[in-house]
Each structure stands twice: as C-alpha cells, then as structure tokens.
Length: 166
Image (cartoon, rainbow, N blue to C red; front, top):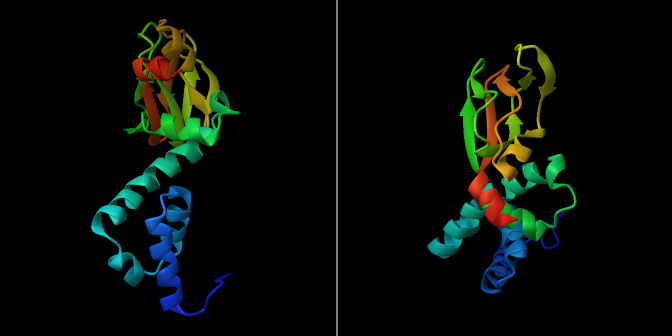
C-alpha cells in the first residue's frame, strides 16, 4: 500500500532516503521506485543500490542453510560478500572422496547427491542444503563424493575465506 498517491511526493521521499545513509531504507525505497524516479538518482548511488541486490539475495540463501542458522543479518551481509555463484551440469562431480576441503557449498537451484566410497547414494541434497562445510573448516580430505543429479547453481566460499571470516 502506498502512503502517498502522488508521484512527486514519492520522488521527494526517495531523495530524502538517498541523502540519509540508512542503506536498508534506501534499498527498500529503491525497490518501490518507478523507473523514472530511479533515473533521477545520482548514477553512483543507483549503481551502489543495484550492486547490493545480489548481496541481499545471497544473504537470503545463506540464512536458510542450517550451518548458518542463528547468525545475525550483519554477519550474513559480511559472509555474502565472500561467496561466489558457481554452476554445475547434471552428472558433474562437485568433489570426490579424498579431495582437499577447499570450499563449502549451498545449493540455490537443482539437486545433488552424496555418494559413499562405492558410489551408492547416501543422501539427496536440494535447496537450501549446504555441504562441505566441515572439510572447508578444517582443511580435511573429503569423506564422500557429491554429484549433481540436475543442473545446479550454488553459492561457494573458499576454505581460506571461511576460516578467515570465523
């Protein structure tokens, strides 16, 4: 529901939000802006807000991963700056038994399976499941393999970044 019906009043509110450095309000205002109001914003401010959107999406995905349960939004924002999106095709191996634990993963889209040493499926992973965190935290060798059942999009963080963060 809009508080003000007139666009010139809304544009004034957006300018006030942009001047203040309360970024959460800025992002909320930006999401509600008309395209003409967005065009009137300073280019650097507009770019900064647009750049924050993927960061917020990463936070949403990470906060739904059990290993990050209970973390504050600030911690999530800091962590989200360190993660990267990767893609895997169906049938592709993410890592196999004995590989070094160089990264952890959180599934955004698709499904993968954990395989035992005989390549028997132990568990099916789906969004928002995460895996590989223990190996990434202690640099141990992988005790299982992970293979994508479907094309997958995942967030990943290197063991170095994860350890430095913690």
